[in-house]
Length: 218
Image (cartoon, rainbow, N blue to C red; front, side):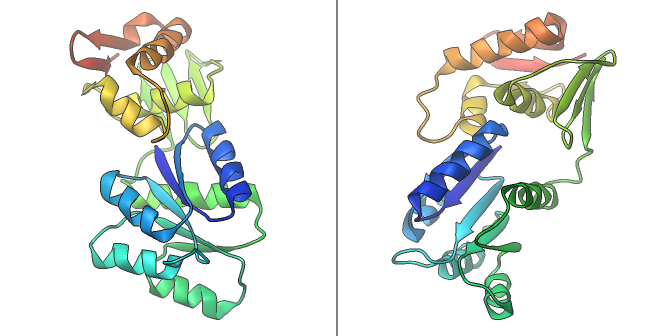
């Protein structure tokens, strides 16, 4: 899943990107409101983390413009301000949740996951394909009841495929949704991660459709 972080404090933005990337998200980062609007117009995001105090176009205006255009990307708004009036304004402009700085990273991560669940379909917390079970909440994978250790990217890749059972997913789609905009990853990188999943889970669960992509099929 791809997340957009809109934060002008570059150290905080970098920390958020590092933390979310470790969780398996593809993360794009911009530092002002106008760039945020452009990125959202070019890519589909599972959620946006949006600071209020931005140069040029603040977070309130970014969110208001998104909603006015019909964009329903889930928005978690951040601010150094505090108080109920700021929260009211954030929610009134279309934000889905509000978190004041300084914040706890585990709390931010929990709220982000909740936003993504609400923004998508009512997805089960455990994805299953044959003997493989992927617990999205606990971030655990098992086959025949035995836990299978996965890297964050392997977990994200497997989750993406299991959400589309019986559907061929191209390498280009995987790159678009699981790697960030600035990544230099290529189709070869996707192949490496798929090969690693096959070694851990069994070749028969992820099939290659020549010239098209990959198919998760039990």
